[in-house]
Length: 91
Image: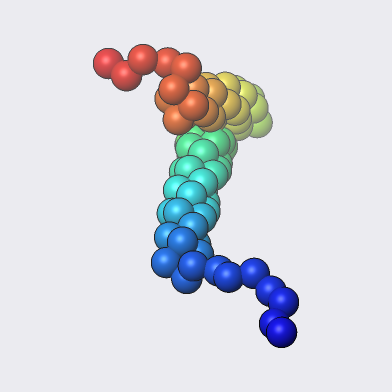
């Protein structure tokens, strides 16, 4: 006499496909959020460095554009998170 559970392989394959799609969706979403935060911060810092070197103003523009990059990066993160969660209506 055999003991065990009968498993329908079609159901298992369907569940694995759904899990793979969810994983890929969230992996893409998190990488998109990461780039949306990192690029404005790095870009603002580099732009501030360039302006400081060009006009010899010390380090004031690095800090100004770094702060602007941080604000923009976190604004992008919140905007993407709200859009992906469905809390914000798409225009």
